[in-house]
Image 1: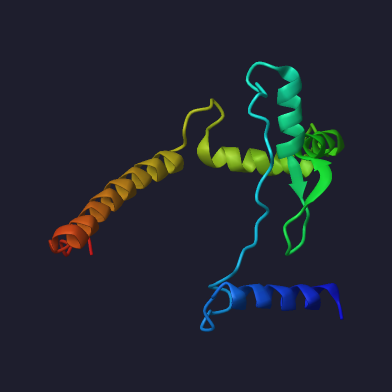
Image 2 (image 1 turned 180 degrees about the horizontal axis):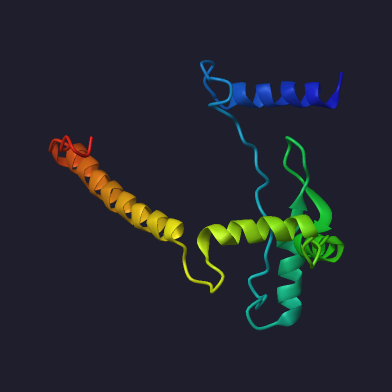
Length: 157
C-alpha cells in the first residue's frame, strides 16, 4: 500500500470520527489537520534582541514542502530569495537592430520628431477620455439600478 493510500485511509477515518458530513462535495469540503503551532518563549524580546529576532526568523521563515500534506523544508525564505537574486538572468542592456526599428515605428505613432504628440495620439487620448466619462456614467447608473431600482438611461444601456 502506498503512502498516499495510507494517508487517504487515515484522513477518511479522521473525517468519519470528527463528524465530517457524508454529503461532503469533493473540491468544496475538506478536512484540514494542522500542527498545533510553535512554542515561543514569552521572555524572548524579538523587537529589541537581535538574537531573539534571528531565532524567530529561523523558526517562522521555513519554506513549505510542496506536497498535499503540509510540512516544512530546511530551506528558509531569505535563503531562497537570495539564490533567486544571485541566479537571475538580466535582459540585454541594449536593443537589437530589429527592436530599435520596432521602437522607432511605435514611437512615430505617438510622437513627432520633436517629441510632440501626433494627431493620431491626440485623437486617441480624446476618445479614451470620452470613453472613461461614459463608462463612469454607466457604472453609476448600473449601481443606481442595483441599489435603488432606478432604470438605466437608454443612451447608456
